[in-house]
Length: 552
Image 1 (cartoon, helix red, strand yellow):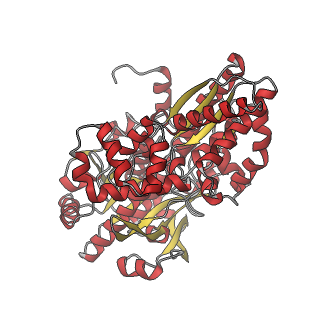
Image 2: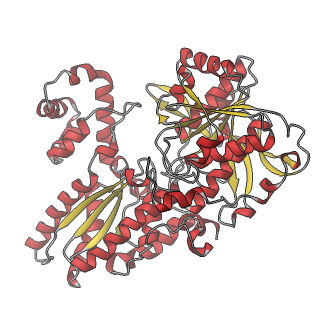
Image 3: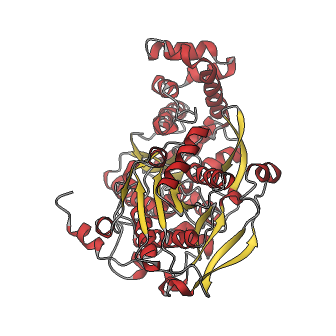
């Protein structure tokens, strides 16, 4: 990047706000054990798998003597999975912590994510390199990747690389799968007598890596504000043009946190929450009815326009679609070779109709041909349908049109339905982090350093009290195993960090549910505008509405 914008240059000068304890000398920061945290389920199975990691206490950092303060550390860091705004500040906080402890400390970055650790592809992270990336978006300082360390050979090579660099710690910045990998890596190192500790950092814009100790994953704040700005612009365009219903699909495969936050930020007319659809066992027809009722009611007021928000994972939460997708996944798991040998999509669709169970086949046949094709596309690394490629918004548009035509024939609808479809995904992953994410990520990186300094392996960095000013944040860490359960994947039971879904009895959803009937009829949109980096703290530093409502 040879020419930087004025904002780009200005962000380099931003100094992240930090918890008060971090301003102290390292020698005055003590790790304080709190209660032992155990998994809520599958305890015995996890205890057998994580013999060296199970049953550790949560930690918080406070005032006290630190006997390790001046110890020089050799630390490796890797970015795993999709980018999330603030990743560079995690590295900045980690680097600054290392140098604050001892100028002899060294930080290396493994290039391209976990594969860099396995294949010993790395670069030295220097002060000049860090300074060129502070407070900026992206993961391009060292790159990221989705390689899973899962074979004995990969684990052995990862340990060999860590030993080759004389590392004291490996810091894994990632989501639930990446931090599951971190927990397994920590256990493998311990089993093989290595004192190298592994520390995780909670990253995902989806917001589904969270609990009472991990109040938010980093990147969620920036991504949802980026999406909300664009949705707000559309909300202003809709009553300006007065002719389109906008169907907007948002990232969030397994959880609807993004859709919920964007609904709170913008007050779109209809927002579908996947977890509610699953809890109520709503059919695809009932989901469509939710949209159609708003379209008809608004049309009766002369308002043939509106905005619908759709989480990208919705299709997997509709019971009959979930059954269909499971059937397709199972079919391809056993017959992938024959399926891939087919010459084209026409033959693949015919193969599906013939080989699926009768009920699933009928549903598959009833879907628009482009949706059928998308269900046939290549699987993700876990063998699942890639729902981000399924244009659920277009499926819903097609079904809404059919339902409205029927309603018009019955004299129940006399309006005009026209539409625009949108998918907001990659737009939010590498934005300049908000002040909140810049502060939060820097503190997470500094916390990861403190966990490494104290030798806390198998922990994930935690910052609590995030709804308060940064000076009042409480840094610490919890055992990764405490977040895990056992799931059946690829034909066997495996330990994984359980995804945190939208809680239907939680404050944010209840706040949304109390307002949505009014929003369905009104044009009282909330227009959040662009991310603000300069100005009053109430505008520049406030956390997400989800977090504010949750902690109110």
